[in-house]
Image (tube, rainbow, N blue to C red; front, top):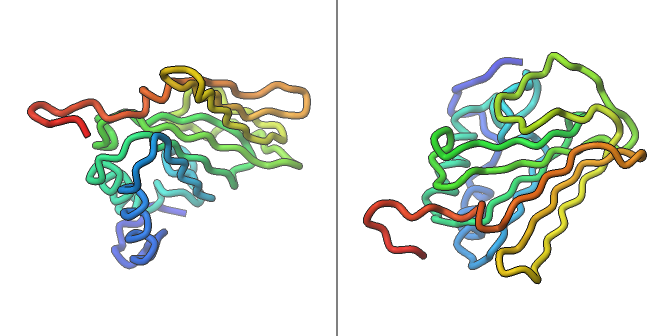
Length: 175
């Protein structure tokens, strides 16, 4: 596997891009984007959005251009779990993007050479499942993300919904 800049190599078709653009315009406090391939990780040399950097950048550009806040990615198909964060300087989106990756339910894969510069903490290599809990009762809702094994160990991370909102640009009017 090697990254490709071939414009003919795509992850989404034009109909899917149009649909995503429309959905990002729908008012919502939180937007979960599920993708079978990791969107934020740049460490794996296998399938992933990073292997098609033009598509990955188009994804970031689409989110940024929409002005939509509250985007959170969930993904799988890796045989390990991890949490990743891409900062605005790397994506062009005006807030950090997060991704919870979980898989698989029945097998893990301890392949420790996989480096992901966007990873928060350590990966979890045992069979796991994911859970996102949202406490809407709080003024600034709390999001709890977990990737856990049968022994209750794994990844736990929390953030506030306000962490997923665009910072106003200079001279802009908040949406």
